[in-house]
Amino acid sequence: GAGVSQSPRYKVAKRGQDVALRCDPISGHVSLFWYQQALGQGPEFLTYFQNEAQLDKSGLPSDRFFAERPEGSVSTLKIQRTQQEDSAVYLCASSASGTLPTGDTEAFFGQGTRLTVV
Amino acid sequence: AQSVTQPDIHITVSEGASLELRCNYSYGATPYLFWYVQSPGQGLQLLLKYFSGDTLVQGIKGFEAEFKRSQSSFNLRKPSVHWSDAAEYFCAVVGRTGGFKTIFGAGTRLFVKA
Image 1 (cartoon, rainbow over the protein chains, first blue to last red):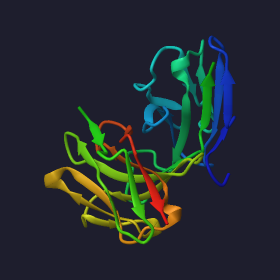
Image 2 (image 1 turned 180 degrees about the horizontal axis):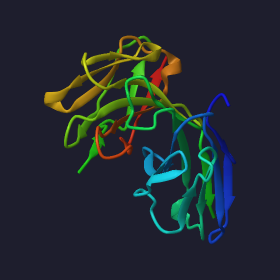
Image 3 (image 1 turned 135 degrees about the horizontal axis):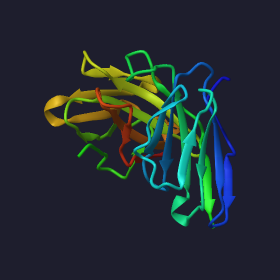
């Protein structure tokens, strides 16, 4: 596609409910990232995939958070038993580079999914 | 600890005036440096990046940034601000080794007055 697409754009979940957030990266992009952006804050790294391999999940805040990218394209971020502190915008980004960014590559961000836990 | 500091939470400038947004980083070695802009309800758009070489980098929309190693700074500048520049600006770093994690500052919100 033309850009990184995330769905849904908005999600309201009752506390304790499970949610799944989808990211469609730019076609052919090797790297995919998830970030969490709380209100009034900068994005915080959650996890990173290179193709289907999850190479870094150090930013996932708890074992309630799980991400997958089974075929190396679409990715899903799942949050189990949502809590109010999970309310945030979840951003997905993709990059053509399979290694650390080089001078001619950049990460492209989606518009995010705003999750509100009530 | 690795961190990015944007000391100004918000800045207001008049349209046509010059702009400087400050960014300082704390990192073991000089990282890759980025500035992003985020408009309400939008994703992050890359303005410019520094990898190596010339310490003054040019970006899109008339923005530039200067890397100063001695000050661990990467300040963003624009000579003449337009009303459409009103947005949130984030400074970010990525380490040159050991992973792909991007560390963002807390952001500076720019208000432009007529």
